[in-house]
Image 1 (cartoon, rainbow, N blue to C red):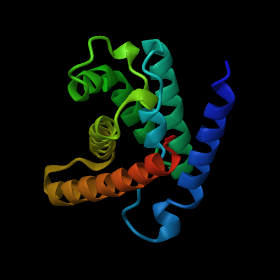
Image 2 (image 1 turned 90 degrees about the vertical axis):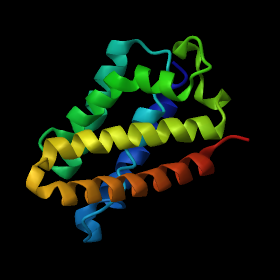
Image 3 (image 1 turned 180 degrees about the vertical axis):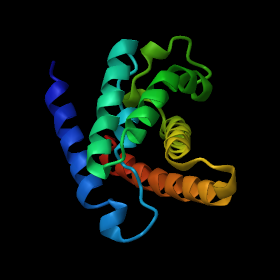
Image 4 (image 1 turned 120 degrees about the horizontal axis):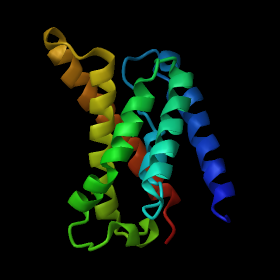
Length: 165
């Protein structure tokens, strides 16, 4: 219960930053980091699967309202939340039970590996739902890689700045 208020404040702050600072239309560029993905990354590992899926879908739906994107962010977020246990097992091979993981106890390296994997998957699914066409494969790959790189850098900076020592 004591984590609900800070969680809501994080959600509001990240969505505000996403809407007013990192909006590609406001920036006038085709590429921009999707920092709201950090909310999917920071979801507790010990939550029930249905709660993670519901929260992930809600986060994506809020991003869809910001970008007027018709459900692509919600679908990508939902898929990433569904694949999250596999990503945890892939990046934390030495952990016996993923539900025992706590982000504050993890090394920054393992957190960055997990972050990169989640971002690459999220952006891939999002762009597949938006515009996948074999004739635009060059644009698809370029947009996927540039947006992913921008998001990885932005989220890594946020994690570094907010990390408790």
